[in-house]
Image (cartoon, rainbow, N blue to C red; front, side, top):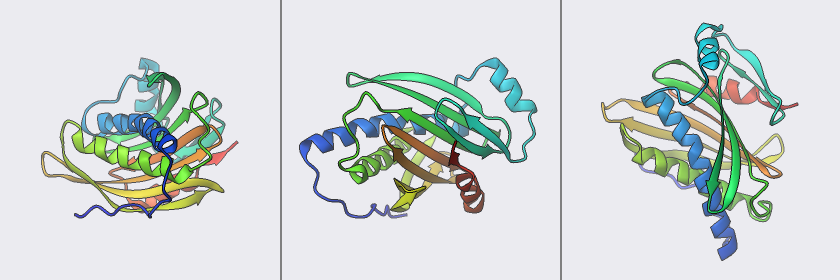
Length: 214
């Protein structure tokens, strides 16, 4: 399926392009979590998280991140992975909240503290576009994946914040096709991503619409 590029963007300065590249690397970490879950294992969550994840109700239930000040409804209690990545001399704390009720699908919300990076507000569309493209390129190179391509994408406003949404087709080595839905957005010096793989668009929309800041 032919990849559809996001809407055309304004010409960026070299500094903006470099910043977009840095953020692309940061957001690639989101994809790593998704790919590990759908095609491998459940990451590095603690044993207590895994036990809770296994026994909790799978009906939609509110989960609150006190660290990043948001709430969202997961289909059961999510695993929580906290990391700090060192990227091009920048220290990037991040938390990935993830719920998978089977081996072929996942719900994910991720939050990134980008306060150590230069100001992102000058050209948010370039940052978001670079992040999305970096996501898909990384999925395509992952173990167990044959191809990954953007089938549609558009810039949007998410709760009044600059964002980008996309639909991605992912083909596994066994021939199985997966559809991923992404919503990435910026708030001040933080980046957030809400993503699903192997979930219907209606369920993705319900997941996204349940997200709010506390």
